[in-house]
Amino acid sequence: MAGEPLISIIDDDQAMRSALVRLIRSLGYVARGFASAEEFIEAGAMPSCSCVITDVQMPGMSGIHLTKLIAARQSPLPVILITARTEPGLEEVALASGAVAFFRKPIDTMAFVECLEMLMSA
Image 1 (spheres, rainbow, N blue to C red):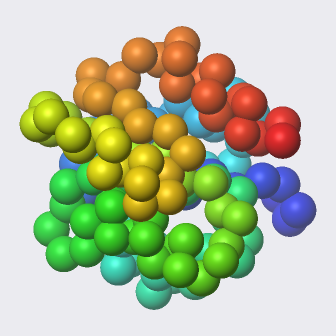
Image 2 (image 1 turned 30 degrees about the vertical axis):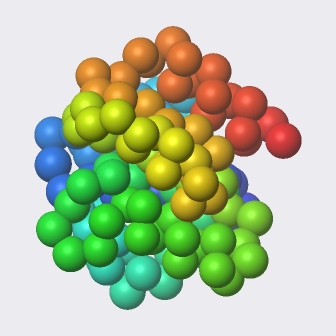
C-alpha cells in the first residue's frame, strides 16, 4: 500500500465514518477513519494523506477549524466538508475556510464520488 493515495475520513459518527471508509475502499483507494480532528493530527497522517473528508461539527476541533489549520500550513491537501447542519451561509463559510467541496448529509453519493474522482485524478 505504500505510495498509494490515502484518503482520511474524520467524523465522530462511527456509522458515517465506516460507511465512507467502505465507499472509498470500494473505489480502489486506501481509506483511514478518525473519530476526531485531534486524532487525525496526533496520528501524523497529514503528510501521507491525499485528501481529507471531514464532518463540520464534531466535539473538540470542528471540521472548519481543521480546514483552516491545513490551509494555514500552506498544504495543497484538498478538504471535503460534510454536514447534517442546515443553517444558511454554512456552505459559504466552509468554502471560505479552504474546503474544495461541501456536501450535506445525506450525501448525494454520485456527486460525491464524481468530486472525489476529480480530486484524485488532479
